[in-house]
Image 1 (cartoon, rainbow, N blue to C red):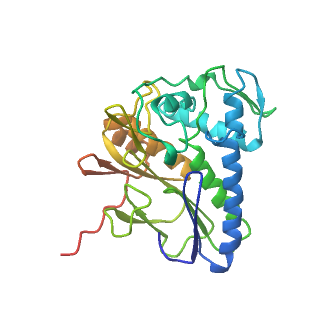
Image 2: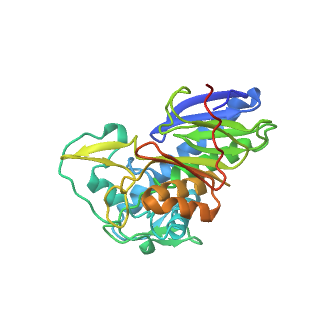
Image 3: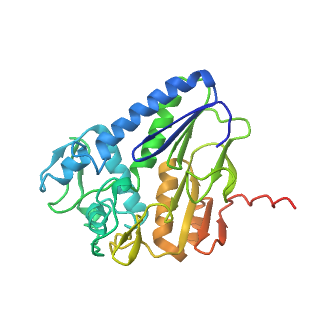
Length: 308
């Protein structure tokens, strides 16, 4: 990302965090606000801490659980993603991830164990009472908001951090990017790659993001082994198995990070159908096939030719 303004970096939610403020004097306040929002999202939505609201709902044995307004918002977001993708993003995929071996913070996953898959429980079975701030899922169904919570955190953190500031703010959570406030004159220069931790010289494309959000979903980074199989973390809820290898990376720009992430993750699940689907939605996207072939849709900028 571009060097306009000042930046802060740390780790949270199991990934890298980058906060950039166009006005250097506003960085300290912006970063403090982002830290607070990420702590709140972690306490609400983490699958890997026993005291999170999500874990309390999963462990309630089918009982209705009082939850915070933030968790209500995260649940609405996850249900909206399921509706928009016809269930290709299903927040009841928690047990599917656990059975497949993603049962702890990714850094702690170890190879080994049999290859097993389990279908998602069915997002229509989530009971959200918005008025009374309660959530209920049937016993045996496990929620996981990984497809939307990080992007929601980026959107909320950027918007909250930008309140009252003269300049603009960019928040990146593992490559899920949200912006708020006034952008730099030439836009936010963002490097799009397979891996958000890549160096600036690695293969990729630099684009100018002037507003909204950007998300990249990839099957190349979060991978682990079970038996003789190598698995990745983007599962098809209809089978519980990793989505078929068609795209190694999909990047999407949208009005907010949540919408970008919904589209990029669902595109991985949808495979060959993804370009037409994204084009029909008018969402600029960059899809990288396993062999490195690049497909650009809906006005994603064509990269400048390499200098000779």
